[in-house]
Image (cartoon, rainbow over the protein chains, first blue to last red):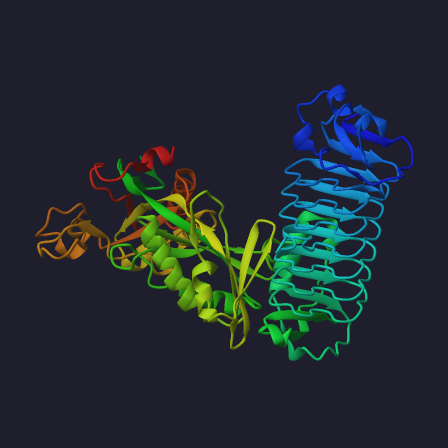
Length: 269
Length: 297
């Protein structure tokens, strides 16, 4: 076995913070030392071994198993390596992550990839609100890296996003790219209302949408070759992006016109 | 050494270390691709007066270019990084930015970087947009046609300039025909360019001049019309000499190109050709010596 496997022993009553369990922090620790790492559970300090059975080694990365919907900050500030989760996860997955890869074979809750700096996060099902956004006290949301959601996303995708790329294969709710500063959001399904509200710069790429927001100006159709460059880069990153932009002659809206109107919303045919 | 009646002189081509940049230019059509590539590599035959030496290296299939369109790789050489950075900026700004449908990307990756789009972007007057996808950063500069896409930085690598062969023969037409055939063959080698018009130079130069302001002047030892009055290197019946200059990213490919060129002359275009020689400065100026007889062994 080449993954360090953390298997949840029982269903959690309170939320726990798993920020300690990232490959670069536990790389040189023995299993016994990892088992005795302390985390808060409600008002009590407990050891990791109270919640997880641990086996294997870290050669390929960390593997979490079980219902981790009450486990927050998985992959927090991770610099390298790989984390795989078999099941759903809680809030702040990959918060301030600087490198490496997280794959969740399930859904994630709110604030996934918050203030992400680099690296890659893949969620095979759905995610909650504030994907790739900033958290309380932070001025900037995601500043680099890539997040791929194979299912749906909640409200405020890319809130205060600064750089990097978010790709959602299905639908997203309201306020996509709200207060976005820069970066790229691709949504292959439908979206809710108020897309790009108060966005300063950045690119939101949508599929077959009619936009009627008053703060967006229609800019006509043109050929956007940069989409092919992005597609080429993304294809090398992940097969999910293969031929993601079949056509580069597309419609463009500029907005939010109340914030200089330098953001762009591109509508694929 | 004599191959098919042609004497391969016991001499060597003397070459110099240079700095190089490889750019990949793409466009909607091959026509506009050629226009852009010919322009950026235009007036770039010799560092003596052009600031850089440049040429088309190869065509690139759409599946191998960053934007999936037909591409051409060009190489630009200069004596130092600063000079090269200036030339790249000027040439991309005036020749690629201006050509319809084109885009421009870095075609080489080393530690030493210079600005490409990061300098050209100011043309966008604040309307330019950057996009960073993992390690690749591009600029989208709004132009009257739509958008010009250009990579943020390009790398500088070390290269070699000044590999050469001299084709000496008894007939102007035969020497030119042989040189053309050699150029065609040599251009099949990757990582090299032949910077002169059609790959051929008729006015090979020596260092210095009787005029103090000139750093180079005609190579009188190889001028057939001066055989009576200079210390000539030609025999009485030699009527023409043409030179092919080769710049490359490495010694091996320059050698390969020289070998291919000499081979095709000796095997198929030997009529009227008497000698293959090479230009050097006694071996004191350039550290790279391409010995003809060793190459043709």
